[in-house]
Image (cartoon, rainbow, N blue to C red; front, top):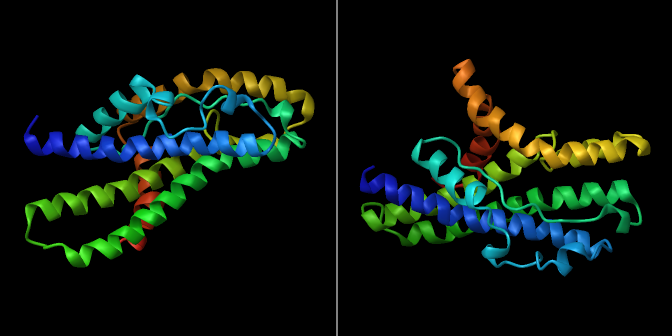
Length: 220
């Protein structure tokens, strides 16, 4: 691996960790505001990365994807919550589920605003400026990747919370069981399926959504 690949992987990881940490903390914060003390009691409403990092999902997987030139995404340890504390379980599920993607969108917008403020101050011919451009670009792009990836409406992704209100009450226990065990299957589909079919549906989806939105938000 050459030095540029290492720098690129380091930039991707530095951008990814706060994106995923704030994403998870947002879930816990909204659940707490809706009356659920679970996340707060377990110390998960925090920006301390050590409370959220999953060694494979937050570090190893994003680095592998970055070095391979694939869209960078991953996952942290899910923030625990108990929907029984919500006054309205279905509304609480939707708001808690969408809090993470909403946090990523907000970070992407902040990153884009920083880009517009910083870019005029940097020299376009400086190598250091080039890496600053790269870091800002990937901070915005990775947050948009995480937002749109998590909005896919299949468990255990956040978008599945939109489906949950449509389910009858008696089906909820089964739905929660599916959510507990769906992540390994999802990772296999995301990583192995493109190798089998010869193209990457997830990459196409993320380029059409996150990629195009990033190009609209950024000045370069």
